Length: 273
Image (cartoon, rainbow, N blue to C red; front, side, top):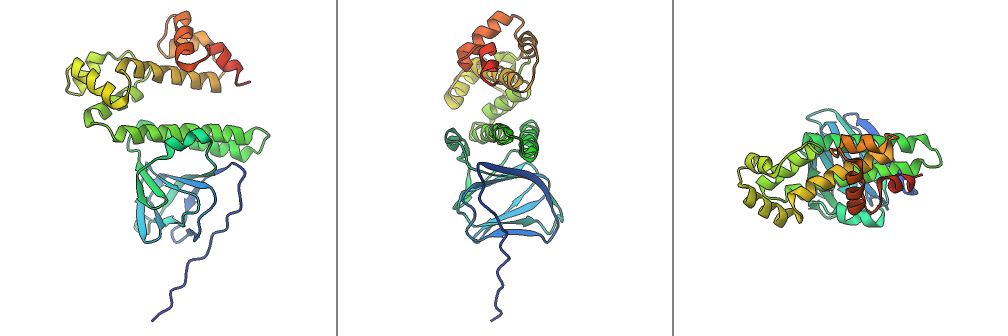
């Protein structure tokens, strides 16, 4: 019997909190770690096709598909030979405590999870956040790790949003996608319900039952989350942010922001300094 030579181990030293990057895998290159790593590993395919494996399980990673290795899970990933190229964003990280509910993705094997984002808007948000995480990590400034973790958190939230949406009724999932893609635009419940083939009352009932909140409050939370992101990452005046997310009245915007986010827009921005 011919002796099978195991693949070479890919070295991986311990990380503090995060290590992020982007890479293009040459065909034939392979990353193999028999015992995995003591951190989590996220792989998101941007172009081409990769293959992720653990034990006897092998799965393809097409564009918009994300894989997640649990700590101490055997890792084996490489470019799909049929495609011949694979460009992906990756991140080794130790999750913050409040991240764990967001990391409950469908399992394809023990310790290996996968999700196909599918939605172009959500996928673009994930790519943007992961790219920012890589850029911040590469700067190696005193605050770089914090910024890199913040960007990775946004990516994981977007991925979790897709994960939750995929568990919904197809019509409610369509509504969630519409609301996400058009956050800040004046969409009425009647308009969304009609697009989903439901009456307004039936749509509102199903939405609240499956999503856990009313369509109106869900829309408002999306707008205010977008406002919070602008407060975090720009110096745009609060009045302009209010208009940008659909609040002509800055005082009403501030009231609703404090109600949903726990702080006024000004206090929220100051807390980040």
